[in-house]
Image 1 (tube, rainbow, N blue to C red):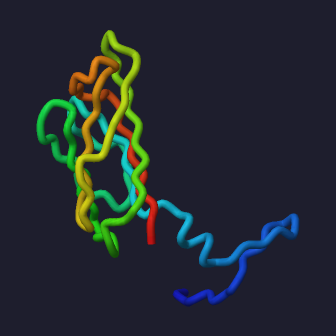
Image 2 (tube, rainbow, N blue to C red; image 1 turned 90 degrees about the vertical axis):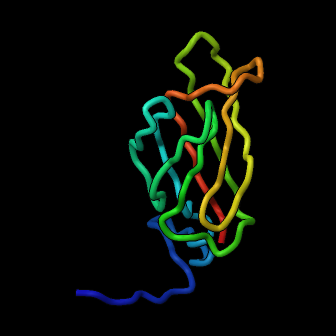
Length: 122
């Protein structure tokens, strides 16, 4: 049976409630967990592919485009190599994809063994 549920608020068992707008806008619009060395996706939502661009540089392609390019991106990476500190930054964001780079603590581009990216927005 298909149908539509219409509600202004959602309430939990303890009686706390929130606006349905908060729930919808607060959910991730896309996310992915992938192996940057083998370029394989472990799990994802609204991500069609992760494209390897160069060492440490990945393009995350969305299955359904974002309404605008002003979304929030949270990314983390794990480098199983000799350097323990890994950081990532956003190169660009469009409605159809975002590009990011991962580096080690010496600012050298590295392929991450695990890349995790979440996208939040309207």
